[in-house]
Image 1 (cartoon, rainbow, N blue to C red):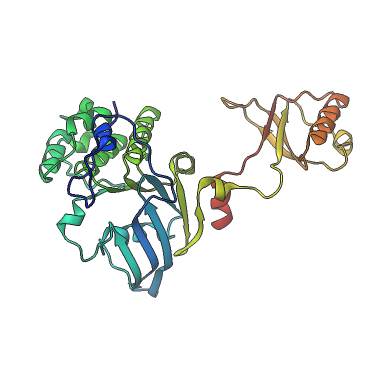
Image 2 (spheres, one colour):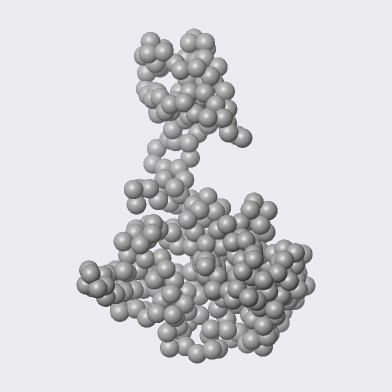
Length: 351
């Protein structure tokens, strides 16, 4: 059963029509096309300088621009010290920029009051949870702060919190605390939610629960802004990626845009034994084969010696490569095209 996140009836332009009725009933909704989705978070030319005792003035942000749209997941990535935390605190209204403009649901979050903040959910990585409280008491209290809270019974069940709801938070594992912090962030049925490392410390089952919930938040029309050091998670979840480095946006776009290659993708093949120099010298014309080294066996690839092939761009190249394997009596145990990943892009920006 999808997590119920009905639209806020106080939202301007709210209509109780068939689509809304379907969403309230739990039917899946189709998010608007990316081009039509409104920007619920917008930063333009944001700069922030802080005073450091030893280093003097330090520029943390140097003209950051990014938007987070309704019905989309925006991933903010970057190495430590890139400015991610400062960007998020400014976007949430916890800090103010020295220059530039910030809009959160159409308002300046630094000057906005409780009406805006009640529509924003924030999950911090360290949680900020009271250690002596239990999840049940804490989440009941958080829900009581809102006029129209989420269905916390459904939410805690979805996140598996019921299993440890009566245990003191100090006794919970890191992953369990993450789930409690996520539930607290969603208690007010926000329109925008900021998630700091939402999958950190989670076991595979819990990670999938969180991923499914994020997908439902996106489907319900929320703008989800998340940070993560797990680039596979970002590649899986994000509609839009913003890559920060040294206080500026180095790359931004969809995962497909950022990972697109110019030219054919290299090919990888693994054989059980190293290939001799004489065999490598007989590689078909137009192809280049380089040894990567010994590889250990994994769940999806056998061990052996791995090689990369450059220049495979048409069927004739595949035929020539297969003929080379046959003539050299090589039997590859694993063959794959190497697609560019977010990790490749990340390492280009912050080697």
